[in-house]
Image 1 (cartoon, rainbow, N blue to C red):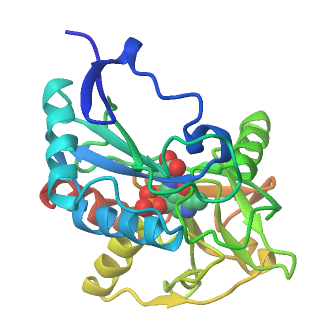
Image 2: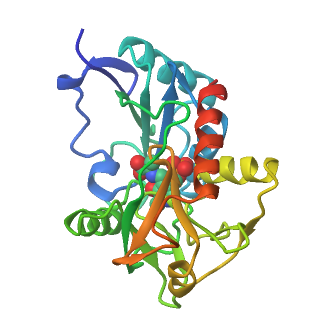
Length: 285
Ligand code: PDD
């Protein structure tokens, strides 16, 4: 059986999954998306992902193409039809199809496309390897809290990271503050073993993984500081990691060629990795 995706009300073979030329997502990036981790055939942290999708749509004044409950049904159906045990689902909603004009069109129905893809995730007890990152000026727009499909600055930054042999590009604001990664949130561990990450606000995406890690850290009596820190503070950190639905807790052991801490994956990072990995194995719903 070939890959099946969902396009505006119908399940279609992947090769025949087409959207209209005048879909506003295609012409204006006028839409939003979500990526949800799938473990043991079930989505992880579905409720906060769907809540964030609703919030992103609301911020852009796009009527949800579908309520949360039927959207869950569609995503689970894709998991089933594509026989995904380990992987992720993708959902994208745009303002819909209308003759190209910058103004919002009249009452058109929002468009919805969804897919599911297999990807293997780490087993319990896995020891993740340290990865490198580069820093770049944050050239994105001022509403990074919206999970917009307009990702030009992100893809340019991530491509530069790839060409430099790095796993992630980290955005630095013009005032020197470390914001987040090209597709992840950034965390550092200070010498006292406390975590630091950028506070929520328009400068970063409120990651679902970030929220889970924050909660798991609190449960493990690890202090979490949501504060602004600069590149120098980051380079002087004892440990560092990034989080996202698809990168889990990914240790970063060098930035711009400088070693973080002693260059090895530290105990706090490994602990957060283990806690989050256990969460994904137990919290699927
Ligand atoms: N990206 N910040 C940015 C800019 C992101 O694109 C992402 C996720 C995150 C982490 O969010 P979450 O923990 O909810 O995955 C933070 C997804 C995975 C992507 O674009 O593929």
